[in-house]
Image 1 (cartoon, rainbow, N blue to C red):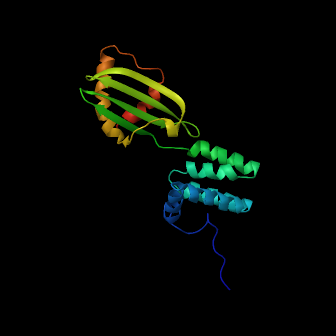
Image 2: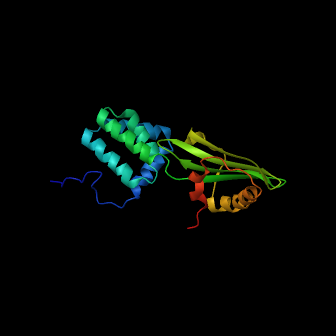
Image 3: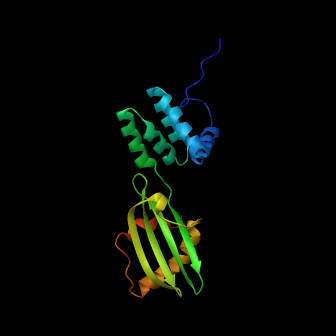
Length: 188
């Protein structure tokens, strides 16, 4: 007789290991994601709860997986729990982008998550090494916030910080709420 297998959440396996890799691959394939959501929907309540726990424990950025599970969750209580987890585990990492143009110009964006899939953006544009515009946009869906590829935050800060200092020294104003982005510029 075979010994019972441990449940998915209690299995003695390395965190951030094969299960996390599997879920991350599933998230990049819409057909596989549909299958993942379907399989989840076929589980009993405790099995669904265990799978949610495993996703939270193992997957570095579980927001998309949690969203797929929420879409098929039949139990109102578990759906409310999933919605709360989504607010906490949507895109949780901040990031930056930069686009340099000729003549000392460019645009840099710093993006930080808000609740759920919303985020806020701190955008700086400049020409001839002078800031043209500084703006903050809030409550925007993270997937539509920034076009362009992510850049290492320290590299973007290295380019933007001198521009901001020049702007401030010349009595230039910063938009209200800019302090929410101070973490990008902190030294660690």
